[in-house]
Image 1: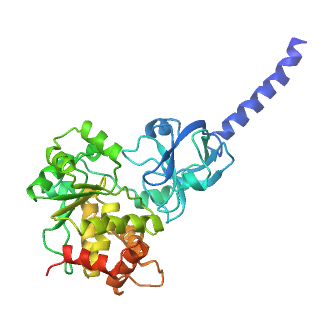
Image 2 (image 1 turned 90 degrees about the vertical axis):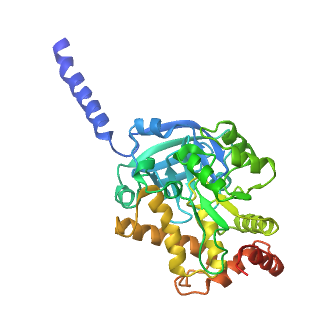
Length: 377
């Protein structure tokens, strides 16, 4: 009797083992279940409370296709998991960006996913593997390796992504841009702080931080921030809390309000976000457009940030250079123009910059005051 049972039991065991093994690497075989979330207000997404490394340790990899399910019933199917914003404007993605405390789900440069999905902190999130490596080709095409060793750069300014805006009617050495002098996540803060002081900066435009975050940066600073703190205590640090949803009415208003204030204060001015690449890149483009800078001048300035962080240039990596040009630089200008039929390389960009500011609430007199503040006489 015992002998007769062995074969059926063995068959059942083998069937079970086969079904388990077949699920490995397939859809749904990897899961992160019922994890708490929080609103990421800077860009408008939802942090899922697991670190990037712990998520990778579960077996997920950048380039995978995943499904994100919220306990309120909102589902995002077949979205990429990337370490950068490698999707078109408005498309969803799960991102593990270097320096982020957790993985995050977001609509790229568009509406706040938190609001769109009807989320609150009682909601949990689950992430399921949809297809292994489905988006790996895009990931490899667009991914960049950030360099954090000062020795890899020929100057402090290049390492800190620090420079003055040029082109058109802009005053020389009057508006500077850089990576953050107070957030040392990317190991450049000390260099940015020193260069900012040498330039005699009188007004800081902090495009990323809230008052709370700024105070935390100052309290936890890994490098000296004396000059920054002095300007802050004197009321000469403006906190814009910009998002990357550049074409929204909210972002237009924030930009217009900031520049209206700037026009009433003395420079030289200094603007930064975290890297000095995205939000700073957007505002730099807008001011260059307003000043009548040539298209190639704006492109050259924009791409210097990719040299400063990744050593990507037209000569060093023409494929990645062209991808950045197409998806990032051109995308930012189109967010300002708001008309896909317009060719940015040949358009009258001054008029589109003025229109963007008017839509944000600036009057013609406000725009003239801004021009008087930042243009050569």
